[in-house]
Length: 211
Image 1 (cartoon, rainbow, N blue to C red):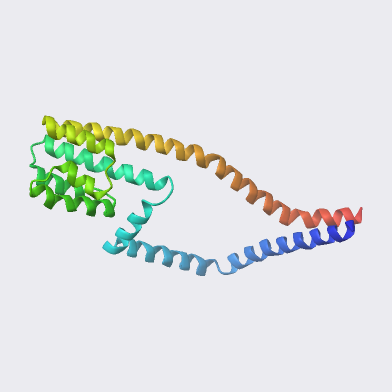
Image 2: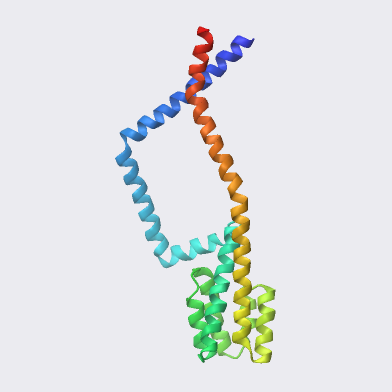
């Protein structure tokens, strides 16, 4: 029984070693084609990503990613509120300031939604209500904007809102780093252990049989 188990393990180890060595040989013999294929794939993705439709799809998809999606969302809101605060504080009228601030957002999906607010604000609707309809502005930000609208201190409140988003970004980044550090170490350890097992286990098996 023990001999059968040992033989089975030895065959599995030999198969793992053969796979690793075969993969290394394949990579060595086809390195140029592999690099060319990867480069072509990356170039194609970048070209598609730079198109309006590609950017819209990828930016909307990015918002749905765990952790990273929240970070991208907070960054877009910080960009918008800070840009709008600077423009309004410098004397730019609301409608052109809102349009410029919306186009300054790096996320194309959120930028498009906020650009849709320009027409509503131009027709006399409060900024806070227009942003609320997009579903992208958190209640805290809307409350601060409403306070700014009612007190005439909208640029200041937008600046405070942007500062809040920046603090939330720092907190989210620290969480991501804390979460991924041990995961990266575990994955690297498993990869190294697997390679060592695949390469050295057959040798150890042969040595044990000789002994």
